[in-house]
Length: 153
Image (cartoon, rainbow, N blue to C red):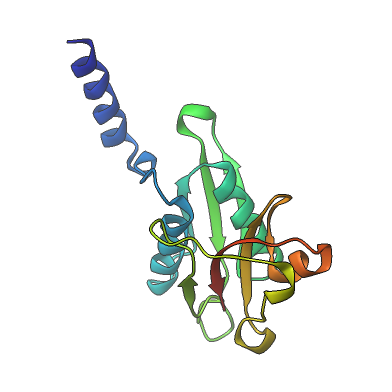
């Protein structure tokens, strides 16, 4: 009986705050899909549920010029990341494509020497290393390998 009450409370919270719904398995794919969908309909900003990995990825995308800004808002039960999207003068989004390299059923790991450029240097790959999540250029500079998460251009 206690489980039913706690599940009911969770469902009510998800009904009131739809941005709290999130798949548990592969969170960065949900973040990037939401960004691409919001950019496709020319939204100015969007809110996604907070996680440390998502925040780090959003900060790296902001630093590399794919997003205009990312900041965390709220307190812990309802904490979200407020992402401001970036467009050029022709109202085209800064992100033109995303390719997921590692997926839950297939993780791709590589050493620093085999990290390659994305789209001949016009794109970026994000790598999860022992020193945290970083771009492929940072990983080559610091000579650390890891799991290639995705490529973005």
